[in-house]
Length: 255
Image 1 (cartoon, rainbow, N blue to C red):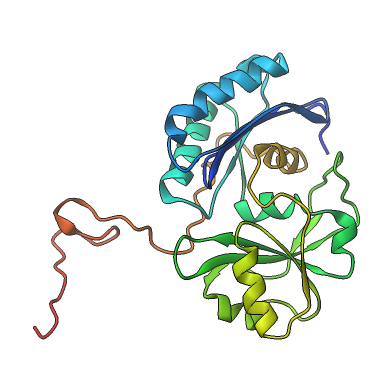
Image 2 (image 1 turned 120 degrees about the vertical axis):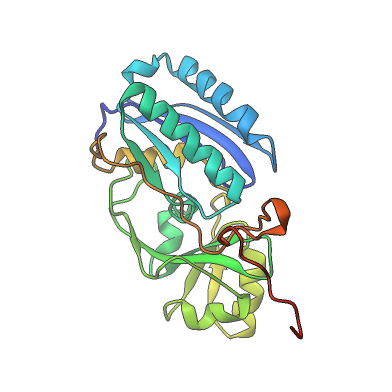
């Protein structure tokens, strides 16, 4: 853990917008606001406010941390674009943290003993996003170290009734904003699980703490990219679906 490191953390990927500053080995300031839209207008003023509360100038930062998704397509892009803008202006590196990691980090160590920790996020469709972790013994709320969340599965988007076969064997702890849906499916499958007492939304304070335990990337290297687990629900001008090459024409049924 780099206790002397100063980090500004940003999140706009989910159902909230938040910023936090890590300094002197702890969260020096944080701002969290639930919102489904409007992150583009709030994120930078929010960052200015937490920097002022922390008593730091932007030039004193060592890195910018940001959530990579999965989450809302627009929110993920807003967070990444803002982090990259700060990083470019300050010549500082960007540290990426997935929303799975940020949500899982809110779980309590004692409730995860002997259990796999599963972050389940609302994908706003019939499916959900999920990833399983093992919480290491080196975790404490005020001293989070790199590697305390060991991934047990790859991040994925899947239907609720596919969770049972996707997740590791044994008892589970569920955390995230899709725990009710996931729990109903796992109960039907006869799995043993419990809900975490930790908050199920991404908070930039946990993003900052996770980033503080990671090596500083080379600022000359490209910033991390988004974690998209499916194509976004976006239609481009002319009715062309996102990702389709220009001039591509949808086939019509029966043609």
